[in-house]
Amino acid sequence: MSGQQKLKIKFRLNTQKSKKGESPIYIRIYLDGRKAEVSTGHMLSTSLWDSKKERVKATHGKASYLNAYLDRCKNEIQQNFLDFQSRGILINVSQLKNKFLGIEEKSNHKTINDIFEYHNKKAAELVDAKKIIAKTHLRYKITKNKVLAFIEYQYQAKDISLPDLGFRFVTEFEHYLLTVDKLQSNTAYKYIKILNKVMNLAVRLEWINANPIAQFKCSYKDPERIILTQSELNSIMSKEIGTQKLAEVRDVFIFCCYTGFAYSEIHKFSRNSVTKGIDGDLWITTNRMKTGTRESVPLLPIPLEIIKKYKDHEYCMEYNKLLPVNSNQRYNNYLKELAAICEIDKNVTTHIARHTFATTVTLSNGVPIETVSKMLGHTKLATTQIYAKVLDGKVSDDMKKLKNVLHPPADQSKDSIDNTESMTG
Image (cartoon, rainbow, N blue to C red; front, side, top):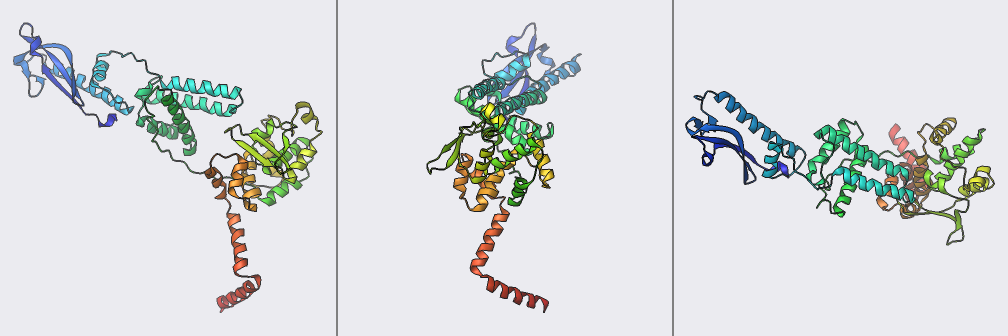
């Protein structure tokens, strides 16, 4: 990496180009064992040059001016070198020389903006093909804007060529997201994850030889997942609701809690989405818009009752929908209102239904985690295991069952009495 490069700058008189008893002062740049020379444009007599100090002797009438000029040249070259270093760019001595001379090297290299444009265009086509959701494409566009804003902020540039990117780029980008954008670590992680995905695409397209940020490890903390207890679910289901729209939102939400489908999946279900499974029972099968994986769930009695309830609903019949779900942006607001009237002190949102299915409805009732993972359409079991971490209640229940096996109730009562007596003395 550029941080390992060694720079040395020296000055000398080039006596081979002497004219009328004066020789030009040259700057010699050494970088990684290679050298390049640049003329300063100033001529000097050999007798007025101190070769050991590499300076014009004080006896010259313009010694102060010329020595100050040499210092400025040295400082400019050093600053250019440090600028390349700060961007993690591995350079050669010719590039450093041309930078000092103001020669802009033409590059045919693709830039970071080019790869984002290519990636996001392909993503837009996948949205049109209904392979990914528009929200995912929007996240890609936001990431591109944040990367370009960072380049503007950090390097005062509009773009950077892909070969110029180094490991330091992503470390500085993370710092920018955390300090300038003031994002949470998990949010910053998501943007860096997309950047890494885009850079991997650049490698596959042979726009760069290797992903310079592939080894970057971003801190990520599993967020606390809010779930509803069975008691809270029962409270929502049994609550008398006078407003039709709120009652419909409640039913759709409960349907999600007992099937594990996300709001975006429920929205696309048509009236014929329910089919018979291999066991002869009714199932719903779909490909998740977020990941493209298959999600297949047998329908429990509660969601079946909800489907039956809305079989002849005017909206469902007109728009061929399984349930009265539309793209109403106030859906989460309705859920907050629902939580309030049911006296549930939690931030209830659409995705809590999916979390609740994974925990309260399935894992807590003994459904194997592999089965839950399959129904949720997870590509990795580790994703489902996150839900298992929040089941303190399940741990408590299981330990109570174990206690009953090891210590039958009769023994427990005796133990309790003995313990009470010993404590009271």
